[in-house]
Image (cartoon, rainbow, N blue to C red):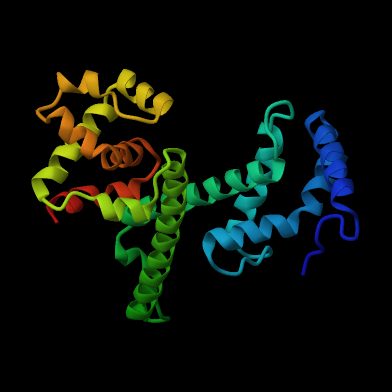
Length: 253
């Protein structure tokens, strides 16, 4: 079990030491970089474990290597003059790289035929296929659950930037299919127009005047569905492929 970084020191001392090592690492001091990484191995393991939702063994799991590389990347990319918290920044990079890894494996898995996973005995007979395929399917389901959880968490953060929440979306969601269809179409119009999207990001509201000439929906209706449409725009323009895949189904419900 790893030792917590700088155990026994006061938080202010920990921050000073972190800043010192970070400055050194970014200035080309390999000893400072190595010390920084080794001191925060428990942190790296914790974030990797939280992201994958399982125990990570640093001696055998690929996820640890990816998380370690991501932490090193965070050192290089962190802006000492602009960013406020290196550990928060590093956590974001680690999570993103692990999610990229899961998505890559999802794509690769779809391209590999099941026959690639056949096991042969000494007489070249296929054995344990059902066991292997079941294990792979369960692992795939676990990774998909991790991806969904990550996207939901990131989507929730984006909603909060617009003073929105999942609970509120459930409450204000249009009850009729045609109303949802109209809202989705308005969301697509905004997502596909850089100027409209810039307005939404800057003002955190809908460009109602510009939309009146672009969609066959009244201004009053758009105002009533404002929050729901904003949530759709956030979803369409974010890095949420799994959540986006549910959009077509949601329109028909």
